[in-house]
Amino acid sequence: MVPITTFHYLVVAAALFVLGVIGVLTRRNVVIVLMSIELILNAVNLNLVAFSRMWGNLHGQVFSIFVTVDAAAEAAVGLGILIAFFRNKETINVDEIDLLKW
Amino acid sequence: MNPALNSGLNSAVNAGMAPVATPCFFYVLAGLAVVSGLLVITRRNAVHSALALIVTLLAVTGLYLMLYAPFVAAVQIFVYAGGIMLLFLFVIMLVNIERSSKDRQFNRMWPVGLAAACALLALFVTAFVKGKALFPDRMISLPESSNTQQIAGMLYGEAGRMGEYTFAFEIASLLLLVAILGAVIMTKKKI
Image 1 (cartoon, rainbow over the protein chains, first blue to last red):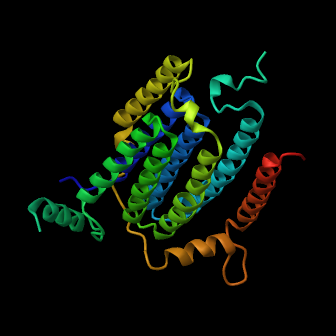
Image 2 (cartoon, rainbow over the protein chains, first blue to last red):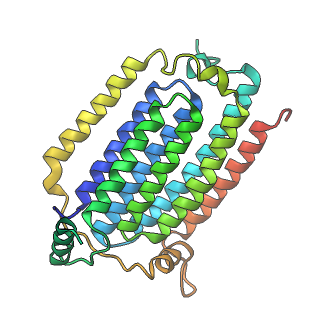
């Protein structure tokens, strides 16, 4: 069996990233769109940690912690917007969120 | 021990790294992550999606452990699987999913979105096939026991000096404060 290299991790991260992008672009439920964004951020984190191991220093791991902080902030604000919107329009479908469309 | 595991271990030793885990673990965790990632974007019920996402997060945590990153793995479990997913499940319970789980699951522009995602996938495949040689095969085993201490040194600084990322760390805490205020104000009924 081939030993696992950085490349293997990059392939897994790319697969997760593409899955996340598909979720963001095609799903209708905003909660699932936000979950897909978490999937994308996880793929990025996996890349950062894999490169951190490849170069033998911890900068990638520190950066992945910052990405996690951003993910938490994004989830909090995004879900807050979602609740505010649901209170006004009684829907969470992206098709029906078109207040700013002209 | 089965022979496949054994040869994996041996090749790991030959490549000059400590055998922290065998390739089998990697394939199991990677498959688990990708399959449950697929479940996240295909399930009709948002709660099922959230549970599948938790499985993905835990599988990725296992991959972090294989990459000698125990602190990042712990942060992943605390913040993602603990905090963010709790938030998601609460919001799913607050908003009404009965209606949305019955009607159409994909938005009007889904063919365009799928085409764009496929283009991205093709880009990744081309880049990885053509650029495979650019990624060196070396895997340096990082010290696992002092991992947290070293990360703390970079974030907080050590021996009275500022760390490399101390300023960025303070900015990150400011970002979290703003996010908390934003979330609270957004969910208030009357500002």
